[in-house]
Image (cartoon, one colour):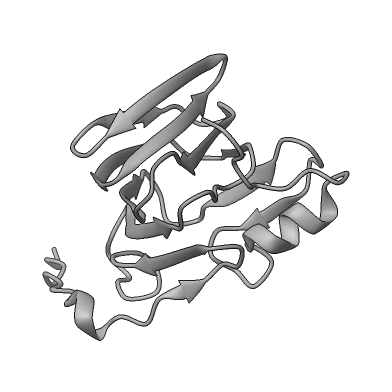
Length: 153
């Protein structure tokens, strides 16, 4: 039996993915750097007053707030989260994270899987996670005039 090789990812060596509209994601572990992993991880930074549109994933997701404060929608629940608070979101449950504070919101996410999709709640459009189509500004443009901007939380 082959034993998978461990992987060390140095944050300073990873190129972040600019997802537009003040959202930037740094992929850490996933199909992009390991053929053996069964999960995907990364860090997303959300600028003040910004957020991601309501969406679902085809896999479950855990999120830890590293720094900042967040307004979070999970299903019907509206929550305020701060540094070191965490969530678990089952597959196919609508959710969104928005920055509720004056500083950058940093979240660490873990998906149970490597073939991850994001389906936008408003449009029904499904894209592969972190693909060129998985951009916040792209999704905001396609929605009916609504954007991911948070005006008051």
